[in-house]
Amino acid sequence: MADDVVRGLVAQRSAPIRVAVIGSSWISRAHCHALLSLNHIRPLTRPIQLVSLHARTPETVEALATEFGFQRWSTRWEDAVEADDVDVVAVLTTNHLHAPVVRAALAAGKAVFCEKPLALGADDAVELAVLAEQSGLTAACGFNYRYHPATMLLRELTLSGRLGDVRHFRAVYLQDWADQLSATRPNHSGAGSIGDYSHITDFLIELTGVPRSVTAEVRGFGLTDDDAFVATAVLAGGGLGTLEASRFALGHKGGQRIEVNGTRGSAWWDMDDPNRLHVFLREDEVEGLGGFRDIVVTEPGHPLMAGWWPPGHVLGWEHGFSNEWRDFLGAVIEGTPVPHRQASFRDGAIVEVVSDALQRAAAEGRRVTVDIPGVLA
Image 1 (tube, rainbow, N blue to C red):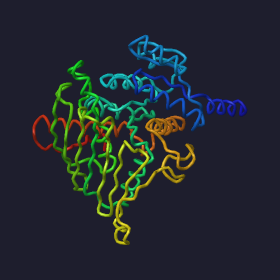
Image 2: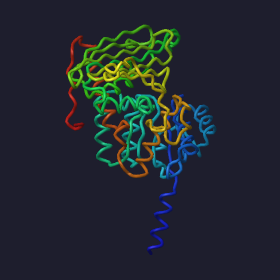
Image 3: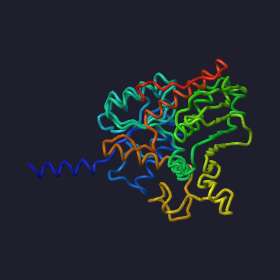
Image 4: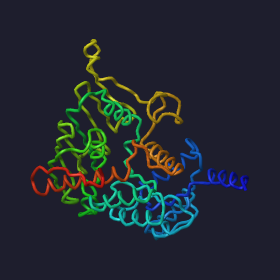
């Protein structure tokens, strides 16, 4: 009997983690690439198996499933939720389907990885966060920019107090893809600029805490009524923050920049140069070595670099997906919540609460206090 138990445990630990993916857009391709690369570059204690792919258009989903080696495909997302041979459901579909798919997957006992936004609105997002916690299942929200070594070093410097108390936070996310699209696809369906660019809202919360209050202005330039926004925030510690995003900023393809100014130093990161963090420390200036340090975050002791390339060999945009999946699936294997550095469903819900406050501030033309529901406290 004891031998049977041991053999059962060994088999369980070596059994693959079986993943179903819902969605077949370019973001699904990025996630599938990450899942495959983990098996070969940074393998977990159990191999990853791509079981099934599900999306609306048969030709598209069949082609992607064949390319990445999925065992099967279908045009029904319900097939992933109902399958007995699926451990993890990756919700990478259009934003309006996130809430119903996640709700069904949790009810079926599946671990869930959901791309941002967790839902279209705070009410659904808060409900999903509560359901995930009550279920005891591992769940994460896909804020992949948390998983660049440079942004993680920025997080460490800020949260450790190395930069002092935060006086200012500023973030921009500028793209120009909508300039051409607006001529052919007006009234594009999406989450609006506040929702589509919630990466910078997540950085605001992760690095400085939940803001006390916010103001916002939104503008449309031909695609929707909400193609760009600018916002201000009173930070949790009393400092000031600004957010700005646009789909119509000509010349910018992915112009994301995050900056923190504290009482002891400052740091900023630019997605166009993702391996580099710029750091200014007050003590350097006192010692005659002022100015921003230009740190290429690829040394062995830097965050997330273990298991990748030798020192000095940079990582790319796609590696953020690999790093976040490694944390998530590691938690699935251990049957635990995701680590603090990863966005949980609670984190995803708080982003939606702040996003709702930004939208309300823009609609009503006033400063709005950010109130986090007690269930998320």
